[in-house]
Length: 429
Ligand code: S3P
Image (spheres, helix red, strand yellow):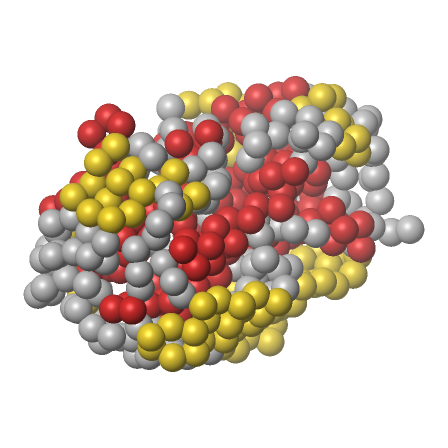
């Protein structure tokens, strides 16, 4: 446990920075690089704990992976060359590693056992286990395979047509990855668009993947290695975007941020709330749109966030809720029940902490109502061992009128090693 006391700051944030690589894209680069034949070089990789779990998983399957900071080089002879892991594989806190790798383990004709940390052990896995069983994988675990630890006997899969029952890119990706090993066509149908990095990257690795409206089709095939540049993570940039939006007088620019439309809900919502935000230098690299985001402080008003918008900003809701405490009027977040199944129950974690700091928040079954505008006090707050809760609380400290003490900041390194240093670089001396 590493507690941290954050003193009131109350001055403008200024300057420029680049945030670490995108977590979702970093995981996928290691997964597809390990399944592809040849050498894949990944640059601007997120050297966070979650993504290291994905590297370790493939090392256990015999793939040669070298990591030097944010550059990862993967040497693989293709998916047929992977070997059985002799030990159970540890996924730590990483839901993305667990769910996506289950798709891979289901496809490999091998026996694999996997486990995670206490938080991951209570997160639902049945959402991926069910479709993978329909494809023919044998998966066993507690509560009929709903939770880690799990044991997978993979191989012999047959393609299915699967309508996503949850708005989850992790489930979509697990089924598509399994489809790379299955007989016949595997089809995923999604009624609400979720992040499409798997589809983009499969195409970059030469896969024949067909996307028509909301139907994605893939077949058993080999992938060829390619180099991947990982854009800055908009979910990490979100903390500084939010900070500049609520700290009076701020003006900051964040360079090379991923701007994939399935991820930019926070930009659309902030613009709707009245934020002053500009995008420049847009370009496409490794199949993903990137650009620079400049944001200046502006008065904000409340809004409603619901429906198809939710998957486009699901990971940003902790910090958006903080922003809403500083907007005039009410902000209502609906249709976000998935928040209760993240690294912690984020509806409770957000509301209980913001209420402790003097904000006016009511929780609902699938979201919350935030009554603005509140002046935030100091107080002792709880991380819930959740990286995004820690970083949201650190941003709150910028506008609080007394010390905020976070009980444990160590989880920030899950997705943003160096977060506190970066925050300091934006502070006026
Ligand atoms: C992710 C998808 C999202 C997101 C998570 C990363 C991914 O989860 O919350 O942090 O990389 O596919 P769901 O797809 O389960 O909503």
